[in-house]
Image: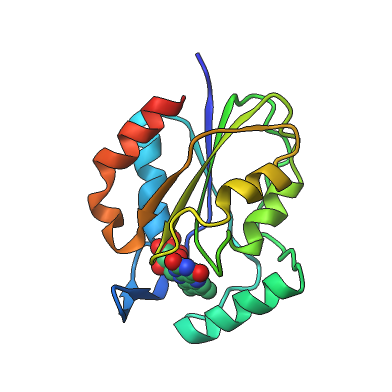
Length: 171
Ligand SMILES: Cc1cc2nc3c(=O)[nH]c(=O)nc-3n(C[C@H](O)[C@H](O)[C@H](O)COP(=O)(O)O)c2cc1C
């Protein structure tokens, strides 16, 4: 049976939801990543940075923009080094300035994706999948990039059916 890995980054705390700032106890992407696991099984891996991003939404957007500009690769608390046992890898993240947070790239660049199939899931406030598929083509060397799914972050908790049907259709 095919084995699935679900890599995700998700930021708790202040976020921009339908035009106003809200405090989230669980990040939108984490909710979706858990729906994938529930639907098709697999191992969840959370990408988490040694240096936390600011809890303040506006400050965090500035930090993220600077990282992107500098092509930063923030240090992670834990890193996967070997994904040879997996067939399918879901890469889930929030849209930050049109792509994944740089922390996800720290992890992706450290892995060998030969013979893997990868699928992007991005939560967002209007940008959709944005640069997620292109980022996976660039950073998941050797992988075949399959169909992705964009979920409006504010609807994450109501997205189980959509996430499950997409995940089942791709693996
Ligand atoms: C630093 C930062 C940058 C963001 N940039 C975008 C963006 O370019 N386009 C967009 O649609 N949403 C953007 N958002 C909104 C997030 O993508 C959205 O709220 C997402 O669901 C958050 O997921 P999370 O709770 O898992 O971190 C941004 C949010 C943050 C914190």
